[in-house]
Image (tube, rainbow, N blue to C red):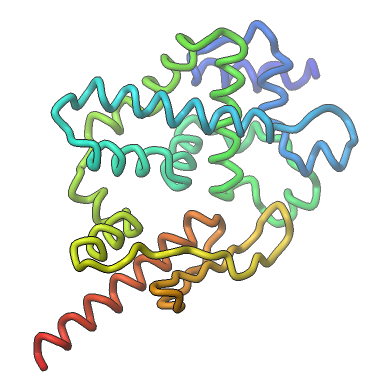
Length: 240
């Protein structure tokens, strides 16, 4: 491990946090494919689970503090945007997290190191590692450091256009229609890089389908298509 210390030290500098327990950051950087391949040590999945919950709470807390006049709907949309896979992967790339990840050989061969899901999950794991190493204040400081500028420059109108699931539900509610239901139809591909197929059902019937590298992404794509179909149908009805 001594040979890896300088690399971790550089990451610590970008995080603004020096680990008292170096095993925590090493675990946060270890993908399940590496742990399963070597049979040595734990992977970062449990830290990812904790980091996901921490990030959601800390982002929500910061948004409420920054935007005291914003309504609940706006806060929810901004939070969803900030903790999305795309947003987390972008932050991970800004701190050059990818080269520090410890991946199995099979994953390395298909270049999953730069995959958005892997980067997003690892960032959540790193946040959890900071929390376990130094407590809530350190985790809160890291979130502010990594996401503060993004929160300051939020464009709610642009975010609302991206959050197709919320827009769809609001439009259906306004029209007196029941909310949509999402159902995973199939999951394809290897465990470390799955592709999810999601059906969007309205009144028990499949209206649209979406495909993505995560269930959330597939649901958003299905919602975007459903919005397009519903709006197209509404326009046709008005012309008739």
